[in-house]
Length: 114
Length: 114
Image 1 (cartoon, chains in turn orange, purple):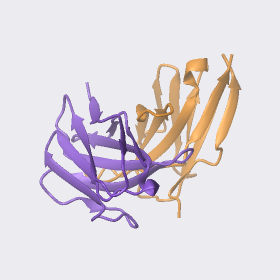
Image 2: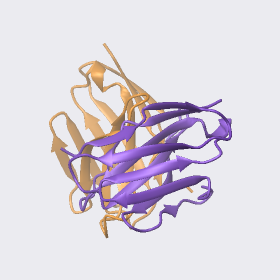
Image 3: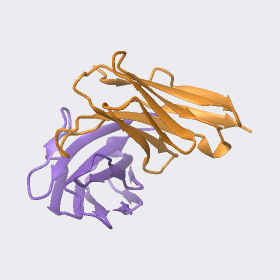
Image 4: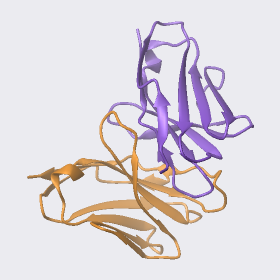
């Protein structure tokens, strides 16, 4: 049973517009969420995170929104740039200890069209 | 900061041989390291979690005798694929975490078994 879901396997957005990547989770014990970006044949790169005590975290062009009641989070990229084209993984964890594993979603492939 | 390296980046080996992949945290001490496998166009599959000085915890379905993990120090973990088969060909990625909650990923190792 997938605990972290990204229901859109792919997304295409025009350069300069907003990209919205969605993620849903099922385990209410998760209280820390992360987004990673991955290019082919490279390791994922950490982008932004949010803890469950917040509902929004912003870092430059990237904003993550968390709706705990809906068990839903989203990553907004604005404005989108061609270099943002990559696979984006949503991930969830518990802040109990650093030993807790992070559960990754299946990823969404974003294409930003020039 | 938070750089994780992997060596080698690519390796080709013959069926039946063993290959070792190293994962190092270069500028921080990793209390926990994770090993993932990624098949083409699929998500990251967690194979095992290792804490320094203790035995690795393997995910269900991962053969611990085939994928030997050693976390000998706070900066080094190794994954040894024993008696490699062509089905073991994949992209192996490690990640490391200190006392925080983000994981920092290595660049990955492409294993090809002929």
